[in-house]
Image (cartoon, rainbow, N blue to C red):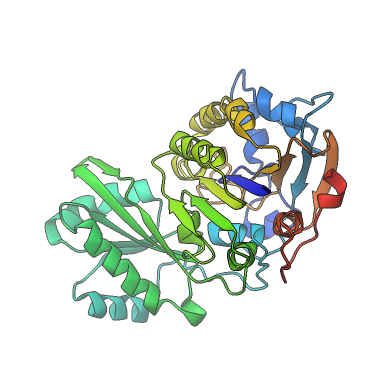
Length: 388
């Protein structure tokens, strides 16, 4: 009963890519810079798997005989956003990045959207999610107009107070925007950002929902699905792949809820893929430049590693990685163009194997297809022969 279990520590970058300067990310190193800032920072369980043995990594300790295989991966696709990173992990390499709108969306997009939802909007600027609701929350409550904003990522975000625009209506607005934003204006995600509270104390809720484009080609998830295998998605994985190639999905309230649900699924008997995203690293800490919170979240996850390893079955292949960086120590609050870690563990796999630097995240997809005996026309180079 072979299974591949991928856990994405959202935004857990481990050092700038060679082309980072082109993205304004020179000097970014999410892990290394956090470790420099935070006293007594330690990730002993991840180190025992080989995190500190990755070539040229900073911020963690070398482990003499790690029980896992380790390496790092460069992003071959153009971009540094969530969708691009996850799609590449699943076997898609984008030659053209999703469009971004650092100065807001063109008037023709906003006017068409307002006409479709039959109300005006406010905002239409690039801003962080917490800033925008504090900046425009009162005006939104007074007028009832939804708040439109974006970021350095390819996103069209709609924020609304749950008492002013009910969540289901907000979702409907997002679906309208998603249908409009195709082709040259095909942003990676349209995101519903509901919030609650009162003036000076607005707070986003867990009822966020992402509306993605369909993947541009088949992923390893699709091929597993077509073979009749289970493809279980935890967190925002379902949204990122627009529910394509997924048999079961659950959303999560926070990182630890994601770990709990991952453990619950691992305990079940099924063959196929389990794909988890732990979003708090990125959403709560990276984008808010909260390096202390990021460090605590990493330590909290590290403390759960033993639980995860203890429930793995004989033929399970565990892969720990990330989708991009989001260095909370830099001035930027956006994602950063970084290498991501690659940690692989399984009871039947070799230990202490250096997978070196992989040229693409898609090597994960190729390895999963190889391991699950799936014939898949996807990008990437399998490293299964190195770890078996």
